[in-house]
Amino acid sequence: MEPTMTNNQKEQDLSQYPYLDKGLEGIVAFSSRKSFIDGAKGELIYAGYNIEVLAENATFEEVCFLLWNERLPNKAELDDLQAKMTAERDIPETVYAYINSTDKKAEPMSVLRTATSMLADSDPDATENSAEANLRKAIRLTAKMPTIIAAFDRVRKGDEIIRPSKKGSTAFNFLYMLNGEEPGPKAERVMDLLLVTHAEHGMNASTFATRAIASTLADIHSAISGAIGSLKGPLHGGANTAVMNMLKGLDKDTDIVAFIKGKLERKEKIMGFGHRVYKTFDPRATLLRVMAKDLAKEVEMEYLYEWSETILKVMKDEKNIDPNVDFFSATVYYSMGIMPDQYTCIFAMARISGWTAHYIEQMENNRLIRPRQLYLGDKNLPWKKVEDR
Ligand code: SDX
Image (cartoon, rainbow, N blue to C red; front, side):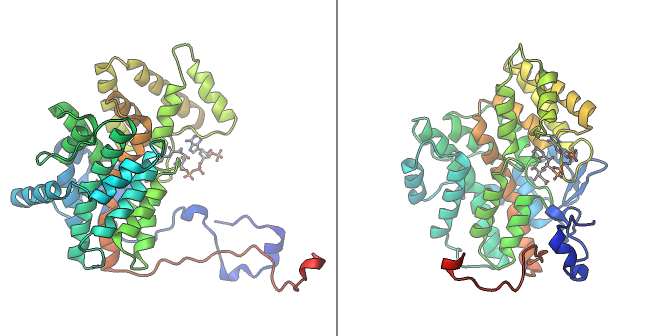
């Protein structure tokens, strides 16, 4: 790809930098056994299993085991993982104290980033970097993030924190701690499906951040803190919140076609659409579209789904761009009564499984990640005293 050159660059010897790929587009930086994406076909595979097969059959705990071990668990292994997750769901009192004392107006993703980083302080394996220790920390992080997210949501609403239950799945516990009542089987299944569809996705920006930090042999908590920061951005995991904020700005009198066309004319990005890899329907969007239609109807908010379908058609007609995972997930979360600024946190409590799987894989065959840059500045300038500048 020819880089865009400024004048002073042209004089530079570019033979040392034959090309410059903004955003590392198309660069294959790693090999991995965790997932495969065919962007042209709209295919997503987690360690051998197509996302449609997993969505239909797997629990989030089975997907966690699959990503960490590159095979599905047998019954004893699954029961063992479930027991370990149950035992690790509670968080240290110091973290509860932080959640209770921090600013109630803080962004949930900021609180999640800080609280997750704090978990390192009391993790018994904090300074251990063996594969076994990292798997133990992966389980702890996956078990504890939902507790952090739910606890802050309760505190900022003025409600008592609900401690994790000694029973149930990650999906069950999250909804129980969030709402203060045990979810029904359908709500648990929907949450489980959201976790499964958001668990892993190759070399996305936050997983790349995880690997870049892991490559210096920094601890897993440092890598995950960086990953949470990366996911927070609206071009990545923050898009689902932005989608809901866009939908909430519409009403039954809005000319949605004109609204979207206007944004496109102003060169504004429509959140929840487009993807660096998928050049067709994101297979997760296909699954979430069905869920959004069903749930919106159930809570008598069909208008959210109808508006979404109108936006989808305009984007296809005007830009030939399809929705990504974040578009319909917004309607699903909203139909479940979850606050829009919590959506990215739910993305994070699913993707922690993929991030930790990649961290462990990076350690198996590590090499420091250190790309080059094309220098655009001047060289060999003479020094000027401050009084002469
Ligand atoms: C996630 O990478 C992953 O795997 C991420 C993820 C995962 O599971 O980890 O899938 C999760 O992050 C999904 C993406 C969520 N982000 C959004 O929904 C934000 C809106 N999307 C865009 O910002 C954009 O599509 C990106 C960032 C997702 C991808 O951008 P690229 O690959 O850098 O493409 P681009 O911005 O260069 O766009 C190419 C063209 C441009 O048109 P031209 O200027 O060439 O005419 O497509 C247009 C863009 O303007 N375009 C859009 C658009 N996305 C691309 N135009 C309007 N709205 C959009 N959303």
